[in-house]
Length: 126
Image (cartoon, rainbow, N blue to C red; front, side):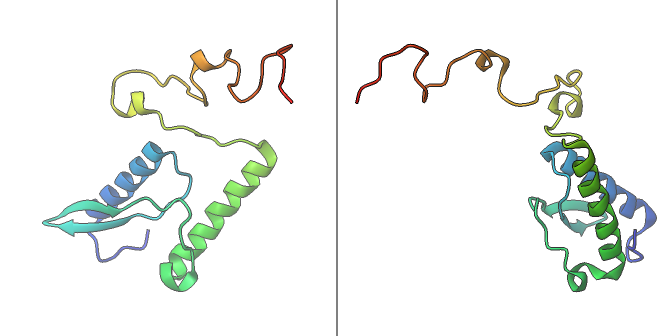
């Protein structure tokens, strides 16, 4: 990372915190802004799942990094067709158990009929 204005320890902490936030949110790309007060980083803007990757805004160093990582992500999706981590694993992050592997609707809803569609054989009004 290109952050000579940070100590190595603070730079590593900010990278780790950014990765933790992205994992918690289930984001595969994001921009995060941090403010630092008395050596403590605070995430102040971290909900950017479709960030601006304009070269002049993120500097040449980060632009090349973003292009490489996003190209890998897009190629992976084209070849494999699914997200690597579609939902946050809150159980693991909070230290309260193993990930349940949540992939969408609750299990109790899996066998229920849709309210929008009439049941098979039901009479319809004209």
